[in-house]
Image 1 (tube, rainbow, N blue to C red):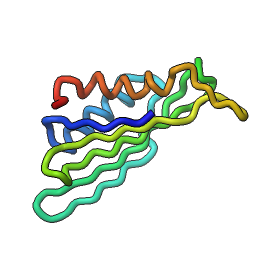
Image 2: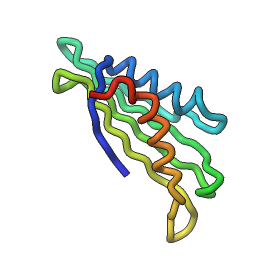
Image 3: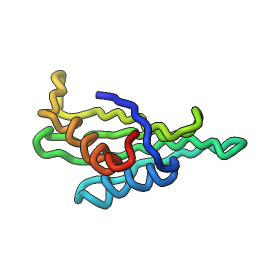
Image 4: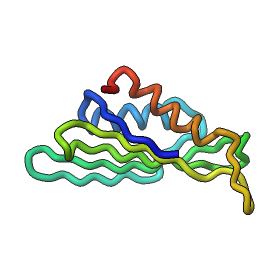
Length: 111
């Protein structure tokens, strides 16, 4: 599942709220990697990859968050994946739950 939306805060603030929702608000959430590109005029693109264990999925799930202001306002793009083992990687809704934790954290700032 992937989705994009805009928020009224800076890319750095949005990424910090995402980090707090995934890592600070969870026992099993962890930040795997973070990459930042900065350009002229304050343009920024941040890509963060998170991982979290979900018992109901029987596996670890990933969440990739891309936050940028390349279009003059802060855009957040989320995509989650993983779950289950074997050929059928059914995650019992865990990837949606993973994204929901971030959506809840950014809800006051969505535009």
